Image (cartoon, rainbow, N blue to C red; front, side, top):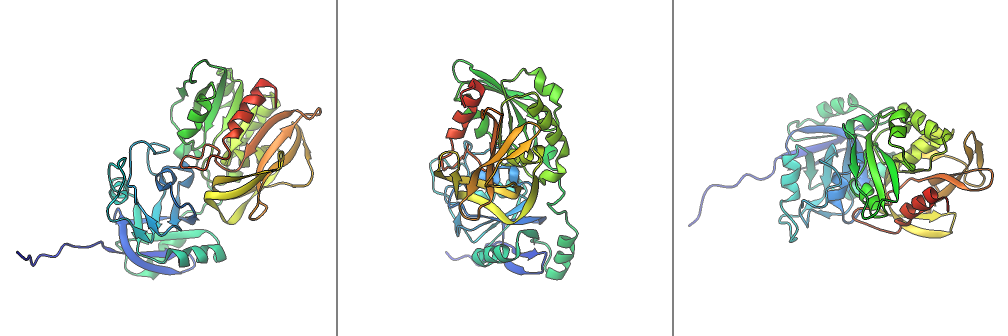
Length: 381
């Protein structure tokens, strides 16, 4: 029997960059309109972890891998309580997810969480444009058909430079992740946009992790009586995040062992007196090569950052807390990817990296950094 009723397909959608470049495609996820900073991620897998990484707050993520959504969405891999990206851009979404772990499709999850996306566009051309022109504001709409009208709204949207976003993604209440087995150390982790895997990696090493809101005071940190302090990844401009920098300086003044990742690296750099700057298009994905200058080893790492620390690579810098130096560099572009702080005797006091050693979805080359944190608290680093 033949039906004359035709099922409606996806609604048309448009994507407009702030320089006027326009792409036409189809709605993917929720219908409506969204704005953010257009960035691209080079990961071939791990899209669920990317979507739920709070560091992507206020960003529209372009996936360079052409086929996305193959394994659907499950209940085990989210890195936080929700999807944080402002919008999602893919070339060819999977029509049917294929994984025994899948509970729903990517399209359904985006729709359920109100995330507006677009599919069917030339993501290679869009990525090349962002590489040439730099990350910029963007709008996606399934309701507006005129690119010029949407462009006006894009130009009126918020920029990432100058944005202090940690309070928007941080936990509202402190909580504790218990150590596995016998507790060896107690650590305060300041939640600037922490991923769930991070405290689990520390707990596996016998660390009891007290996760505190981003705007916690140094007095609240000290009340936990921690053996060390950790600053997490997170979104926004480090130059605008002044409260956390002052808290970190107070931590360093008291000589507490410190470990920071991603945004925690940028705040560490500013606490030590270095500047930060916005990268042209940033590092995002799970295939970025970094060299640990303290060992000479090269590791493939997971990144998500649009800002970087401006520090001299070839020599150390005196600070009120000790001698600071660059410990890691990106082999693609020589961007500073890690810092360390040593006392007059050369003993390690604090360190940080610009990438994600917890690396949910992989790779796992950098997991040794959690062991380095343990050694630092033991006094053996």
